[in-house]
Length: 414
Image: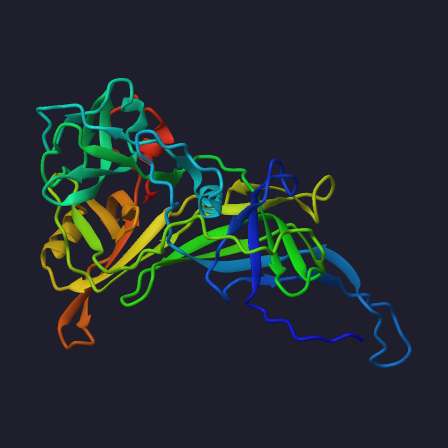
């Protein structure tokens, strides 16, 4: 027996977008929150229950299918590369690979410039030939002279003319800079599986692999903390602990600094309202039902699984939102009338490379319960809103990308 002391929190983590189920893909480094990754090596134990003469006479079980689980937390971090007019889109963003595999759709576009001396807060044109960098539904950041960079969403595009929703805070000037936000959206079909590897910095033989993985995520926006995403996965197979030849060399994080909730905004308003209504709230949480699961098989698969597919709870809403906020009677009226609302939770921090964003947008949602009134911790009356995301019906067909334009949830990072 050989025992040793290994510091658990020192090591590296990698993700692969598998080229086919439980196979292939190139390793991309990730930097999860220290101490949060966890590999659970579960496997069926098939009991042997032969008739015996003696009491409690057991036989070791037969090992069945492997059913690993893998989880970790990751700070909300844009890539260091700002999506400006001339940037080369990076391929080494493990956060993007992971998020994209769970949402199914990713629209990663370069930025552009406003080319319009008559631009308004509700309509502007961009450089000739670059309108397709802002397809309908795309999220972006634009430099508005009165406020600096702010987020926007494309309601409609006609060649190079862009109609944003909600309207901008002010008209952008000619040659104003527009940065693309990597926009994640619900795709109707999704078969992308992932492979994760984690290593120990102190023992080359202490490396684990979970492949054929799919799962879900949830956000955490808590005052006084950095914004985080919690990921949880189920895999088709695992390997380790053994030497998997992944590097444990030091490498600087390729992502920008994590975003905090300081300066966050909640835009919550009837969809007919075009100007931005910033609403005070105490907390915001969102539960995503991405429906990803394994398809099972008796033969021809990996441990009884042959693919991942969007197939679970498809009759339910893709996302449900809960907001705690000060009392506001308008929302009682919105509940009674079933008025569709627009909701966007926006994080923005100024970093060395400029203002960075994380936007969670539900362009159409409805209150699914009466606002609940209660006594808050500060002895003020609070109300809790529960909203259900619905397909976005605000954009005029034909669309550049129907899934992007109509997605019930869009997430922008950049």
